[in-house]
Length: 115
Image (cartoon, rainbow, N blue to C red; front, side):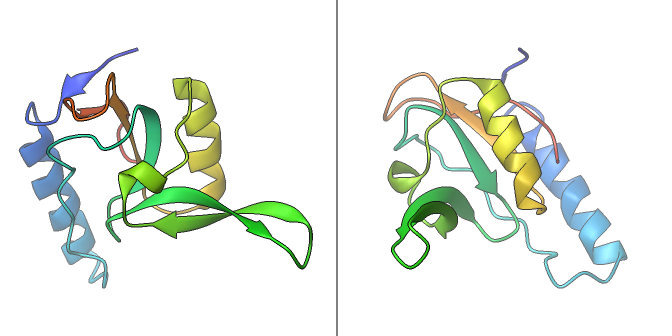
């Protein structure tokens, strides 16, 4: 698994993503910055165009667990493996990145490119 520190190439990626969205005249042209420090542990799915993380909530009406979006990484679904995070990111159908933090309040790594 390739891991890059947030600042290694992230500025170049963010500029490119912003340019691609602006060129398509996409309303989501603003790209949010990845968190400086992790308030999560493990892998999380980050929807960078909205600046939200993938979370879970219990739907009492259908008695199932559904996904929702949360602003705080501590409330995000924290996956143990990169593969699990990729599977959930694929189901979202939105531009996402997989972020990884080896420890809470530590460095944030971007482990995949745009989905």
